[in-house]
Length: 122
Image (tube, rainbow, N blue to C red; front, side):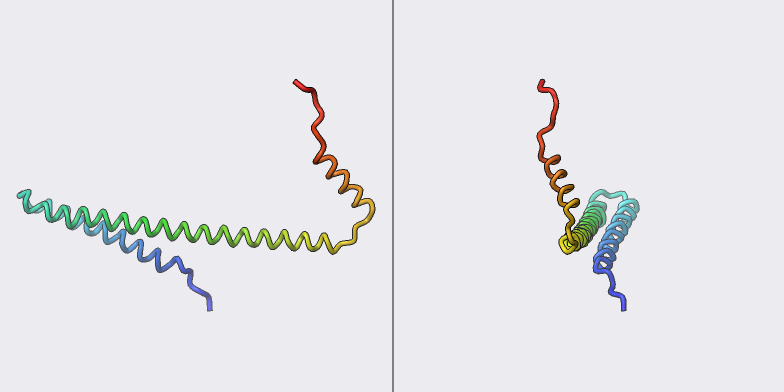
């Protein structure tokens, strides 16, 4: 049985909050457009507009947090795979017998890497 991705319930909740926010904004706009008296429009603007905007912001924030956590977990998993592969490579190189030619080539590479660069002083 395949495990469900843990981001799915959080993503569904976030999208539902965003949709509810837009529905609240649309309903608030509908009430405001239906009446001409400003004192009747203010409750609709507050309950529809401001609450709708708050729901959209909370939904987007939850979605951003969940996606960020997912990307961080994936990066950590990839890093562990790379480190495991490097460890296996180092172990394989340690287990391999070293010939004198390989040893001399390694010494030359170390000397070349640690040598001071030649060139004119300016």
